[in-house]
Length: 291
Image (cartoon, rainbow, N blue to C red; front, side, top):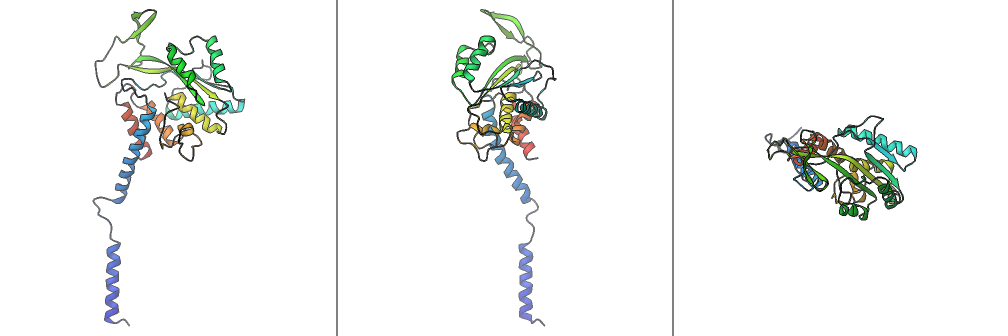
């Protein structure tokens, strides 16, 4: 039988336990606050990531493939070459990159070699249009600033609606100046957009030792489907592009990360002609990672 004093103590303890277990203020649930804080932090990191990936010139559209991509892999054993092609096709379908059929003319060349300089020199002798209409200084910069995986982009300019520009409007020496005869006169959109005509990816076999073919395929996919600077500093972003960063994130991804796939998907789904495309990419990536 309980006396009055112990009974009072039990009642006070019960009241205290009830008070400590009281639900938080319903007007601002804690889980919502946590999600919003996470979203804000993620958006800051994604913004920094996109600023490194996207071309720094805000007066130009971000390049992407408008014609179907036809990849060709050379210099790897057959099994590894077929794996690379299969992985590139899988990533293209995930991101919405247009893919050509089986019988097509290659426009995305992935070449593995132990002598990148020698290969490029002999290739240039056979194909004088290898670097498009690039200035000699641009070509020299590409050749002298070597990287374990080098990339060269040949691009063309199209109307914002996808039609070709008229190359006969003006002439400077022997070079024609593409001119848009149907401008929209708006500051919201670009009058013209840039598309890849061909991309060359050179893999230096001497400097990719230790990588898995999944890592190499993911790295090549990022360079082949978006205009990127392999030597850029991508900070702490969990990206396959960290493979050759000065201070790579640990552990290194085994292939394309969620961030990489989200960036490619956003690049190909947002409005290429919009001057706000970079912001659209950021918002789409954040929504995909934090629904």
